[in-house]
Image 1 (cartoon, helix red, strand yellow):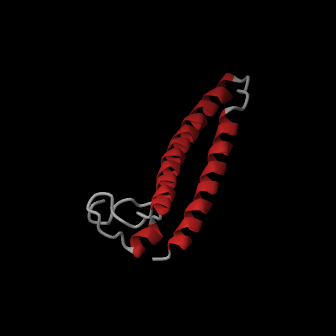
Image 2: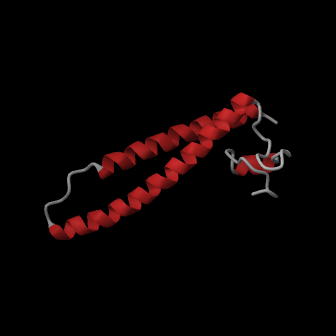
Length: 103
């Protein structure tokens, strides 16, 4: 298994997620529109942004955990059954902590 390749993929994804979360924070910090109708639309948009931010945070934590597993030498080992996680699964979900059967 080419762990270095996965480490590069995970590091790149972590940078993307960090940038996305900063963008979401910036948008949520915008001054509200004085028009009540526009504020209602902004609130709906803010709810969607918060949902995207929550998803990005969850993925960030999973990516960080995968990078720790690389450092510990346990990357690619299922956290449940201790069997190998297939390269095909890691290609699709590089931060996967479980094999296909245990997921």
